[in-house]
Image (cartoon, rainbow, N blue to C red; front, side, top):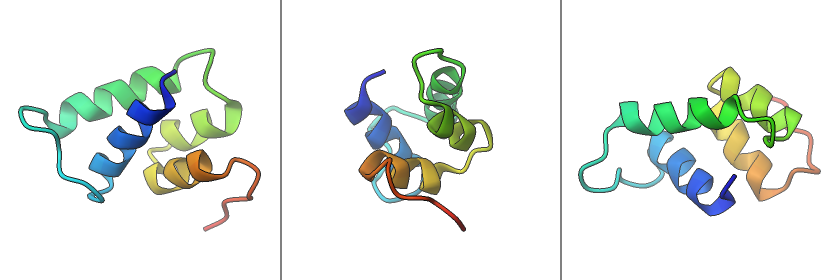
Length: 70
């Protein structure tokens, strides 16, 4: 799992950054869904991605040790 690419996808899907030219939301969501099914993905991050809690997933990437309750 490439953390920086994941972070960029999460920022795009949460409207914190524009989609890269030629990309669609569907393509970004497909990549996030693929990551959520990977055995390499940490459990808590997988949980956020499976539930499409993309803001929490992005916060997790910033600091995995902080509880993310909302």
